[in-house]
Length: 122
Image (cartoon, rainbow, N blue to C red; front, top):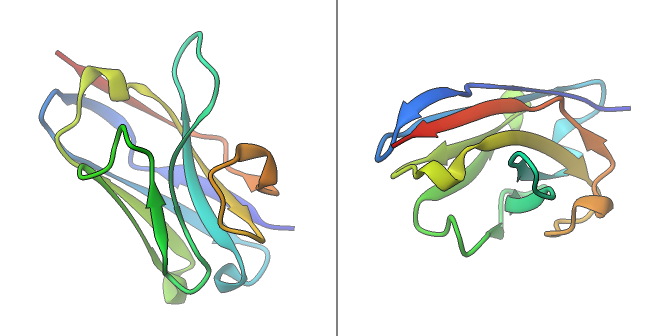
């Protein structure tokens, strides 16, 4: 079993930056691919970014490509999501996920955090 806990969410103005962190425990962190997903009110959960167990390759949704960067530090059992040039449409609960394979499909991930709220004001 793997436990994940997100942090770093908050309220930020459009154009600002935010850095999310996801701390893992319970199993060997470096054995898992990691992904970030988000869910806005009234919408389905959508893919944001993913990174392989080795740190590469990485993937990002078209809506965030060039603005968001996913990275991981296996020594610290932590994955990050650096979010720059934030827009109001980025407002959502952001979830960290762990799985065996690096994919963009939520159902393929085995473990999930409880989420952290990101609100971008205009």
